[in-house]
Amino acid sequence: MGKVPTTTHQSDESIALFLIGFRINKPFKFKQWVPVFTAMPRMLAELGKDPASGLLHYQLALQPRGAMVIQYWRSTEDIYRYARDADHEHWPAWKAFYARAKAAPEAVGIWHETYDVPAGHAESLYGAMPVSGLAAATSSEPVTAATRTARQRMRRRAVQPNR
Figure 1 (cartoon, rainbow, N blue to C red):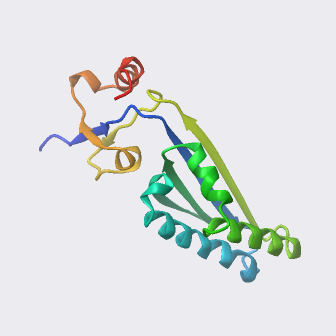
Figure 2 (cartoon, rainbow, N blue to C red):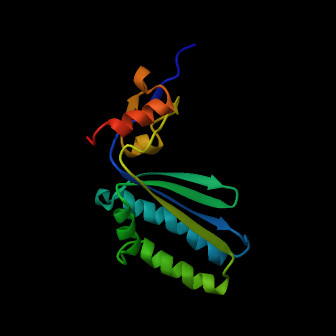
């Protein structure tokens, strides 16, 4: 039996972590939740075509009554800029959601959380995994004797200057 390949992310840059999701509260109110469900793929496709947007990587997580998208961004300012740009998918979708929500305010729930992660304040480990998560947003490197534990990886990032 061979050794399981284990990697960590390789970056000491600041990032923004953005979690966004929705929950279907009233499944038979299709007109309320289907537009929410279909808006996110359009936004992600748009962002994927524009490296200058600041979106570094995303992963979709399906949940029993909805979905969540884990997004890695270059900065919170990039998130805010995209969210408020009327020439991109998000702003019109956001306005349309609130207009529909007036008719059926509890049919679908939406949420988001934004985390500004300073350089050196992120740690990762991937065992027998393709490049994922933070490593996909930045880059990947093998775990070594010096980065075997979470504490070692975090400490190493905290003391290294930005690259």
